[in-house]
Image (tube, rainbow, N blue to C red; front, side, top):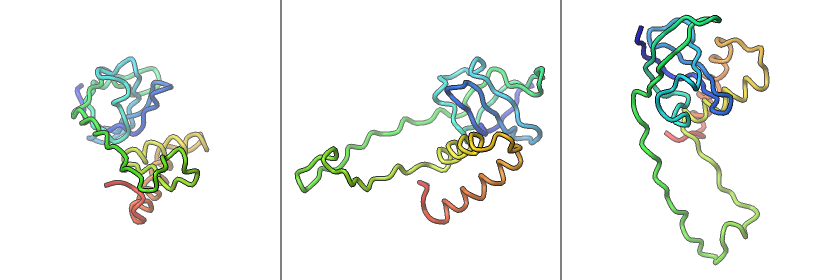
Length: 143
């Protein structure tokens, strides 16, 4: 059966992750061998369509395709420094890596799983939602 859902998380190195079906229900296992597009494009929060199958351990996705191809991020050159120094000369660089909400959720999910592998999916989702809300309220995330 063809379904639509959002990637909950996908570990490009390990080659697997999970999809939350739009229709609800149990999270669906996804594996890199079943991806139609380039592996690096599959990130948390992206919508995909897939065929639902029953694997040995539960629901499994096959023929996983991105619904929307992400636009490549433009490369924006750093503004020239007025003090004549380059960034390598500045040991106290105040630059921060601002993430989108989807990027933050993906990194946070991996950190939570790494910190405590016994968290259930429901627990992980609740903790992650609260932390993402907190990050949004402080303006720590890019729109």
